[in-house]
Length: 276
Image 1 (cartoon, rainbow, N blue to C red):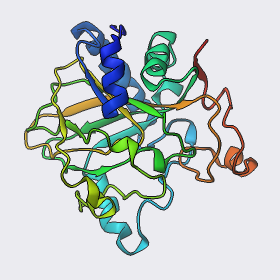
Image 2: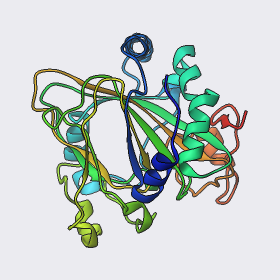
Image 3: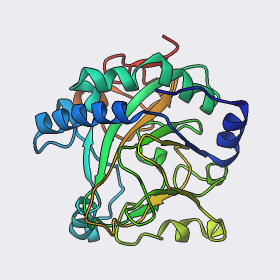
């Protein structure tokens, strides 16, 4: 695994809120990771989240279109969350100090905790992923939250590669976001000032990865091919982040014990990955 960073890459990430990083993993490392992901997904069965956590994007889906949007969302990708809790190899990757230091340097913070990982696998002919922001869905607000998106297959414009709107992390607001729904451009009604921004088209070879800020607008096209477009992702929370009142992936008992403003420092649910 390659985790070296240049100052130019750090500067680009800070400016754009996104960075395409080449040759993060070798072919052999991708093969090994795919094997472990398959094992974890099989172990989860029909459950979406490991350890029976309750997963939802609070207030993300309007009641009047709940069924339509749920059907659309399910047709966008296979999603399984918190595989690190089931699989030691995935845990070593996403909780390891190498990646922990890398995301901390990019984000410009001194400490980082895992929020959650997830595999996002676009099936053949899958729906596009609407433009959206990540951090407003989560149980904390931070302008330094960061995610890694690892390409497990070549990601192309034909099969639904990621696209990022550079600089949007600077003007995004926590209270302005939209659901992942059939209205793939709905975010631009919330942020009309972003309409003229040309996206970074994140075509990647297998083993490349992308990093993006939790407030960077991003989305992905439809999979217009008969093959899969598989990815493994992980979101990270700066150490010291506080609870904003949203449940998201938090287990019910822990969620009900929190008050807005409490520090999210549970070492079992969101372990510190840097420094260790």
